[in-house]
Length: 195
Image 1 (cartoon, rainbow, N blue to C red):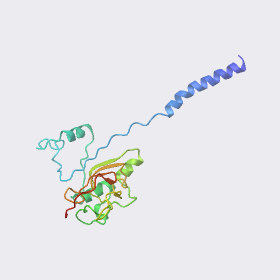
Image 2: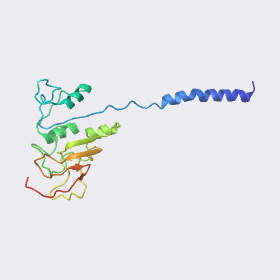
Image 3: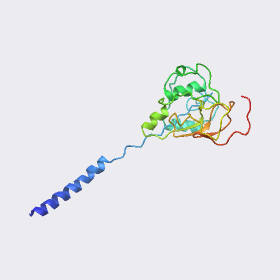
Image 4: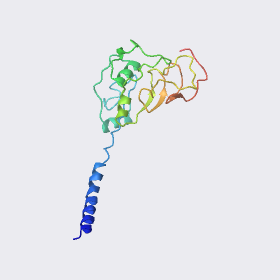
């Protein structure tokens, strides 16, 4: 056997055997599981049928999510109202560690989550998740009355780590009565009422 033939055979064998190793080294990580976290104001533990088969409230979609996923069944909050509960859930901190010592924020309140504070959303983003918050924010949008709704409403959900937000700033009975998409009002209010 000539030296060139030997080298061709050796290099060819090395290349062929390297492909499976390279392919194994480039395997994709398994897909991340989908997470859906539902925080509903004024909903009791026994309201969805997945927790109470005798419930008088039909909740077929929540029941299906619960049946096909993992149910979170042991939660505690030092406050039973919306703003402190949202703060505690998103930050992992006791709500009394904020400037809000009782009650809830008003619609025009400054942001309750401090800039740079780790949140559930920012932690999930660090691990490859795309995050969204849909519904009532009620943690402050960093604006005070009067608000120029042509400008971004910051800090808000995006600064708290969410990639996307669509919802309302506070409760339905609190101004500003606007829908917010990411950090912008979808429309400027046309009338103002006393809150």
